[in-house]
Image (tube, rainbow, N blue to C red; front, side):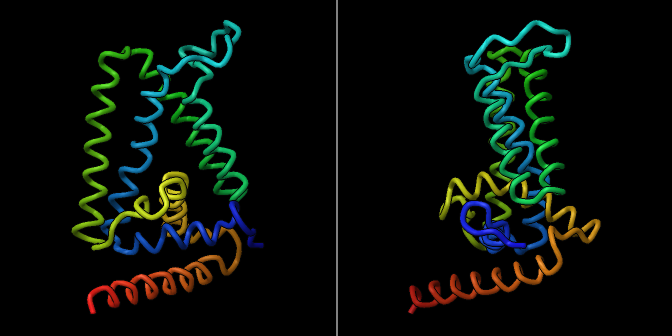
Length: 197
């Protein structure tokens, strides 16, 4: 069931989960992670297009640029990690790209960057408060920037699916992940204790 390396969902989930055990911090991330991705895609709308798309009624404001590429990378990565939840995450990623493109095309760059800046500041502040006040542990991105950015949207989606519907990518996933998280937290606490003594 499990995979190794880049596509090892258990390893990714345990890494990210070890930084997100407090329910309030998880809730804060659930509310703010996807808006960070969405607002990033708003700004990436203004990057140059890779090629000229044919003029059809459906591509209203859609540009195949770095925003599309980012959404596509996220979508494909999530589908490879887990087919069922990954397809939902892929749909959300590509929907974010479409929604961000439409919003950006309506706002124009001079207003869009201000909206993005405000959204990013608000969402990141909320997350740092979640870590500092509730989790009492630095964010995962300080230890592994790429893994934290790639896993954050999928982590919160899997948390919601597990909490609301009892979803598991495969039987025993959450038990195995919990054991890995407990081991990672113990290792972190041991290191912290050594530094203090």
